[in-house]
Length: 73
Image 1 (cartoon, rainbow, N blue to C red):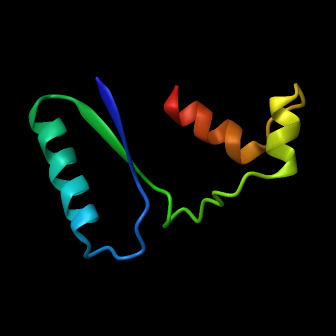
Image 2 (cartoon, helix red, strand yellow):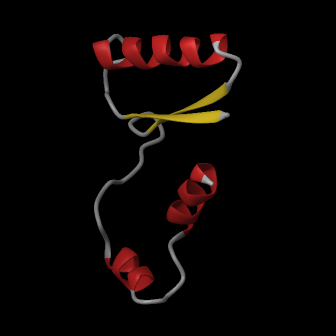
């Protein structure tokens, strides 16, 4: 199984980061693969835009959304 761990915290020394790291170590120890999606580090813009609304109405989705959907797939 491939596990996508999603994290968004500005402090790399936070409990959230430490927990995500330990979780990923457990995933690997269990024989699986994993990937970290650090949304803060990737500078993901979490706002819902007019382009997002247009995609909901059948227009093509913005490139950043398509990339994230491909990563989840």
